[in-house]
Image (cartoon, rainbow, N blue to C red):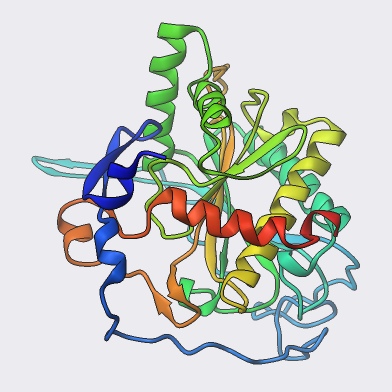
Length: 347
């Protein structure tokens, strides 16, 4: 391990976005006198009669949820994007705006209100992946849908308003900023080298063995060299697949195992229900071949030192560039040690 990277301030380059992150490992020793988050000790019931995501309960729009037994998907009652809206644009000097349409869905991972992905079995998570695949294909086939974004916000500190295990799927007519950056970088590399940018990166990580947290026959779980969030993690297939629909049945199970292992490790790290935002970046659904894409899933957790101390993206991060204190290598080692000293992969 390069000691300079562990002891001195430096910046690291994100090959997927062409952006830099400032790393300040010496700051990890500074005393903390800032805000401490409240750690919830609530034990949730398996069914909450007041939860609008639980089976058989009434949602805010008056609809009754079915008596679902595994995964349940419905169109978001308070969608950020509207399916039906007029086409318009504003082009007034430096003032520009365009209409944007889309379909937003909610996906309940389980009928059990008390669970999170970390509490679910590999087989249960595989069922979630199956619905992700189905919705990506279904929504992506719509003429004016050019991107399908699958994501989850877990925990109140990440703005989640309902603790029931669920995620969201937003499909829209344009390709959002982060996907555009990754599309541009991967396409340029693929056109030049005729190989996957992320695939070559994973090969280098397998040789270095410094940031890999867990692997199975088909997937790697690692802390990216350029990670921004303290315990950021990426899950990526070893074989280049441009989207999740290309996974075989065995690969889907291996993918589910990775999600199971890392979410369990997160919960064990600070002995709490670990908050995060996670999302899958995969090929846009803009009817192009997009063979330069190599899909991956990222987890962005805010906790820094304990269950009650979080990383704030303020000040320099807002006006300059992202910054982190704990290095990617040390964060990966902590998570890897937890996994190696547990039986998470046997769950």
